[in-house]
Each structure stands twice: as C-alpha cells, then as structure tokens.
Image 1 (tube, rainbow over the protein chains, first blue to last red):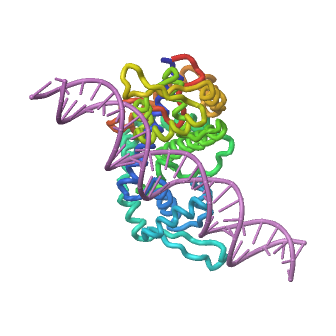
Image 2: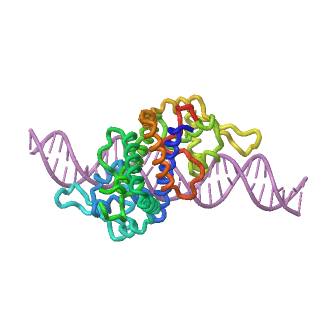
Length: 161
Length: 161
DNA sequence: TCACATGCTTTGATACGCAAAGCAATTAAG
DNA sequence: CTTAATTGCTTTGCGTATCAAAGCATGTGA
C-alpha cells in the first residue's frame, strides 16, 4: 500500500463521514439535507437571500430552489417577501422556526472537528491547514472562485469570523 | 481568520470539488452518479457482485440497488445471472459496455490528484498522508468499519494495490 | 414604445431512496 | 420430513431532488 493509496483512502473516509453526517444532521433537524442547506445559507447571510443567490451558492437551478423554498415555506421555516426596489426579486427570509431548526441541529461532526482541532498543538494545526489547503488546491478545478456552502454546513455556532 | 476557519474552508473546498466532479464525471459517462458508482464497484470487485454486497458497500437499501441495477441492465451495462450455488442470490456482472463506460469516464479529478500527488517531494507526501488520516480520524464516527466507495470513485485505472 | 434581459415560477419528466409487502430458496427445529 | 424462521431479491407505493423548457412579470436600453 503506497502513500497515494493511503491518501485516497483517507480522503474517502473524510467524504464518507461528511456524507453520513449531513444525512443524520438533517434528519435530526426534521428537514431534508437540501432543505437544511437552504436554511444554513440563509442564516449565514444574515437571514435572507434571493432564490437566485441561493441557486448560485448551492450549485443547483433556480427551479430547484423554488421547490425547496416551497417546502420550507409550507412548513413555516421561511417567508417570501417581494422586493420593493426590484419587484422581480423575492427575498427569502428565515423565520424564527427556521432559526430554531438550524440551532437545534446537533452539528455533531462539525463540533467534533472543532473540538479535536483545538486540542492539537500549534504546529499540528499549522500542518493540517497547510495539508488541507494543499489538497484543496490539488483538487480545485479552475472554475472555483466563490466559497459556497458545502455539505459540512457553514461555520455556524461559532461567531468568530 | 484563525486556523480553524482556514481548515474548515479548505475542507469545504475539497468536498465541493469532489461533489462537482462526481456530477461531471457521471454526465460525461452517460450515466447518473449512482449508476456509475455501481459500475465502479463492480469493476473493482473483479466484474461482479451480489445486490446485497452492492447495497452494503454503497450504504443504500437493497431496493435502491434493484432499481439502479434495473436501469443499468436495460442499458446493457450489466447482466443478472442467477447463482447456481444458492439460487436466492443473483450475480450482477458488468458487461463490455459497462466496462467501456467506466473506462471512458474521464476521471479528471482523480487523475489530477494522482498527478499532483506524485509530483510532491517524499516528505510532503508523508505529511499529506499524516494530515489526511488525522482529519479522517477526527471526523470518523465510531461506526466506521467498511471502506465504502465514495463520490471520489474507487481507486481505478491504477492497477497497483 | 418595443425589444430584450432578468428573476422567479410552473410544468413535465427522470432519478434517488426508503419502508413494507411479497416471493423464492435455504436452513434450522422438531 | 415437515414446519418455521431466515435470507436474498423484487415489487409497490410514496416522497424528495433535480433539471429543461416554457411562461409570466418586471426592469432596461435603444
């Protein structure tokens, strides 16, 4: 087993963990993963965003966002408000119920990571950052520009940055 | 921006890349991501496996596997063969068409990673492996045992291990 | 004003995924 | 051997995710 294989296997373990985690997280929160992502993005954006912005950030079509927003609206998690400045636009705004949902989301994996990371020595943290950024650069297609929210969920519950 | 944030962002970039990659890959191959995963697993298993084994490795239900296999069968990518030893079992076998599909899959991201990784100095490779395994361990839930195939695709096109 | 662009929704379709029920074959118990 | 439990797979019925294309309303430029 060479290093390349080892690194690929480790990568897969990481992907697998985050995949499983996002399913559990969403289920615990009582919404589907895609719906939870919408709520998380809204929260990270200060509470509201346009469908267009959501679609871009999630990497899906506007039609898909419409469907997700429909679901969340019928559950009272978000509200649609027509923009007064440009009537074509709609502001999707997270409600109190939506906020409760994201706050109640246990976020187990993220917390686990944060906890483990902060336990590391300074030099180890630096090494991890360097390594992860290196790998990310290796994988990045050229079209990567924005920093969209991913399955791991936004930095959340940690009011730092 | 502290190191924790940086590492989380890098992680997200990694996840995002693999996510996008798996969509592109599948589309280029003319099958859906889930279907391609089936073909890749079959290939990595020497050409055939039971639905049960596929379900376990993919982390989905048998019913789902049945549906995927139905699709692939109707496209001539796989064949179903009743086991002679235990008639309850079915062997799902990849066909020549299925093999062509996986071989034609550009596998751009994996190749990119492999290429970049092999360019690294020895000590850098060692560092990456250590860091990735560390992160994987940090994220791993306790229930991790098998090493299922993930979105990144199986180690493939590299006849090493 | 008229043509075009933009933002969102609707429509119609495919895919993914599961639970529960069903069927066939094997194994275990009596 | 016969019955009961188990195992492997498929079928059925359902909900979600996703998209392309068409539609509608609003803005903008010529």
